[in-house]
Image 1 (cartoon, rainbow, N blue to C red):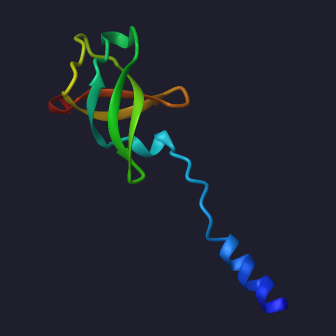
Image 2: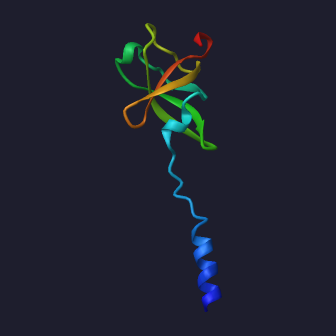
Image 3: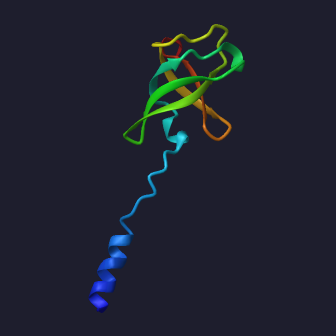
Length: 92
């Protein structure tokens, strides 16, 4: 019984909560899914691979022009808890 309890305890330590943490996306490339409006005037959506999962996350930009659908971007920061701040990839 003690051995079985020990094995179960070890197995429980292997669990993962599976939560996607947006801060892990900083520095990663993604593709615009819905147009990102300029100067943080609204939210767009970006498809990005975070923690080996393809996620669609809200995004804003500080650029003067909107970033259109299909454009490749880089995540440069977070705004709030889960909104990504992006810039066009060619502007690094």
